[in-house]
Each structure stands twice: as C-alpha cells, then as structure tokens.
Length: 364
Image (cartoon, rainbow, N blue to C red; front, side):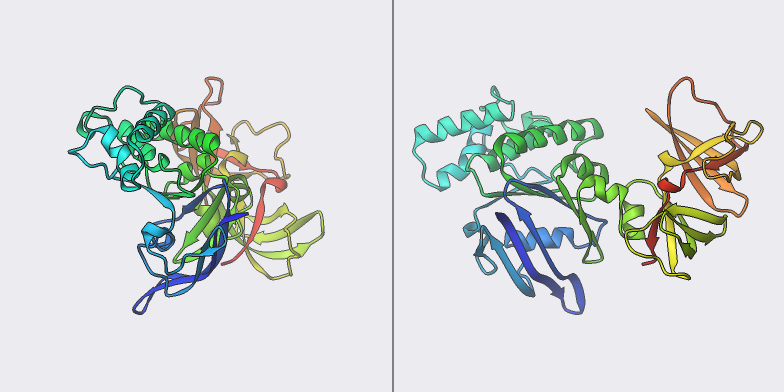
C-alpha cells in the first residue's frame, strides 16, 4: 500500500516553475530521501506534502485519501526540523507531551507515552531538563521523540541533521535508521548531503531544477545513474565525452579524446554517432608508476599516460588527481593502506580501467 502518492503535482511562483509536474509514491513503512542541490525543488515538494505550500496543480494522496486541500493539522503527519523547534521555556517532558495535551489525552497516558518514547530515543533521564541544557544531538532526539510520541502515519524530515557536526551527524543517521526499523513508520527525508541520503535511504528521489532526475535505490543510483547530472552529483565521477562507433553486443566502442575505448553494453542499443559520456568511478581506476608499468600492461590493453597533480588523504582512502596528456583529469581512489605504493606530486603515472567498469550515459 502506498502511504503517499503524488499525481502531476507542480508549483509555480509567477513565471518561476519551482516544481515541474511530477508523479511518485512512497510505500508504507519506506524510508525515502528527496536529494538535490539548493534550488532543486526538494524543500518545495516537502512543504507541498506537509500542506504549508499549496500546489499549483495535481493531487496528493495519503493512504488513498485526497489531502490536496486539507490543512496541515488534518493530514496526520509529523515533521522534524533542522533547528529542532523545541520550546525553550518548557522541560523536555513538556515539549514531548505538548502534542498529546493538544489531543486531550489523559495525564496517566501522557506520562506513560513520554516515558516510553524517551526510552526509545535512549534519553530516559533528561525529562526535567530544559532544551538549553542539552547537546545538539540530544535536542534532535527530543525533537524526534516529540514527533514519534503521537504515532503519525508519516514523518517528514526537513534536513534534520544539518546543524550537527560530522561525527554527531553520523551517529544520528544510525539512530534514525534504528527508529525507522523498530517503528516501521514511513519517513520522507530532505537533504542535500549525498552521504546522508546513501546511508539512510531505501530509495532516493534525485531532483534537479524542479524536476525528478532519477528515482532509485542508493546502490542503483551510484552504480547505474541515468544522466550525467546523476553521475556527477552522487559520489565522484570521471566523465569522458565521446561518440559511439560500434555496438557489438558484448561491449560498445566509443571514440574519445583518449582514443577508442570500450564500455559495458548499455541497457539500450547505441546507434552509431550518438553523443555519450563514459562514466568511470575513481575506485575502478588503477594507477601505477610510468617507470614500473604493471605486468599485464593494462586491463583493457591500453594505459593512459599522465602526471600526478595531487594526492589527498581522506582517512581510509587516498584520492589522486591525474592530468592526462590531452588535459583530461582523472580521479583515482585507492585504499589508504600502509602497503600502497607512494607517488610524488608531479610524477609520471599510468592509469587504466576495465571495460565492464566503464558505463555509457547518453548526453543530457
């Protein structure tokens, strides 16, 4: 059963098309993230679903009921904000109890529900503290608890981790995943952070300029992006422009500034002369010293000569930036082990990759 279903929903502000007509649905119990850069329309879409923005066209259904014109209070939704939105003059208990008191629940039931939800978010001993006495992570947990306590059909998360530092943000990602798995509540999250989207979501709705670019699982979006925008926005991408020369079934031959390259067979037949981009992820590229080429010379029979411009250590991985002879820049990613070969900046190097790690994307 679909928890949310949107049919041709759009939003205009005068001449500006903030949200092009779109269709998509979220299954009951699913965790879906709206991902995209600033101005992509993701927050507008969340606000349309929440009822804070009226769509210019289309219909919104929650559990099969048309809520397009329903006020926010009648939609049965919960919302968690980036700035926590806790009432500073109230204790944690009163902040969480507030939505229950609005619903006129009995006092004993309110106490029980607040106690249970504080246990759930692993903050059982802070009920009488004020928000200013809590860390950012604790405040965000209280904000989640206040939303969960009245058991909404759907929780909307508006960049809830944006105000936290990196380590705390990663901890909260795990906490939200745990709560989602335990409670089975449908969650729709908004973020511009690709790592957050990849680590938390069951599906991602990638948005660009008010349109849906691609809807896919995190693995599908990373491994099989449909457009150059999707490829470059998710992770790091080496994109090489080219023209299809031949599609022989087992692989596609593409003419590029680096010469003739082979790529994995595309999901659709490639016509000769079609303008394409070849996607190679950095972890699929091999780099060796030009003075000591590998014994097998190259995975695809061709090594591309270049110069190592820089190497950046990112904890467990090292990212190398290589400038090839034709001025193409290739990013190479290696595991940051102690046994990896060291290369000095400015050193001549060779790079190569396997055809099956080279994917064809039609030009946007």
